[in-house]
Length: 156
Image (cartoon, rainbow, N blue to C red; front, top):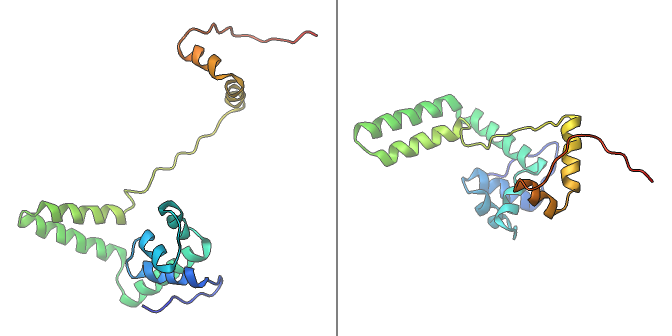
């Protein structure tokens, strides 16, 4: 496959090789190794998150989709047909494979993002707990600490 064209951001040679390998169907780790990255699996996965790389991949995939005239909905329909055919001939392995691919395309395997916002009161409480020693926290956890609700003032 030809290397993707870049307009706004330039890719390094390694990044271009990585993009080409990903477009050829290689996993993130395989693509990173083929491109010459010598990182851990976690660091290899981060290569794709670089803005220039993710833009190049998105652009190339968009060009590929417009060239082939195949839309995501059509691919899902094909996978549903494959699932139905596998079901007719009692091939549970192929049914699972088709269902897995549909799930991936629909984003069911994406990690759930939970945003936690703290009120000022909760933030103050968090700071108080962070100021406690491990021994004091252990006493609270074991129910041995005596908690008195109120205010205190330091008298000098």
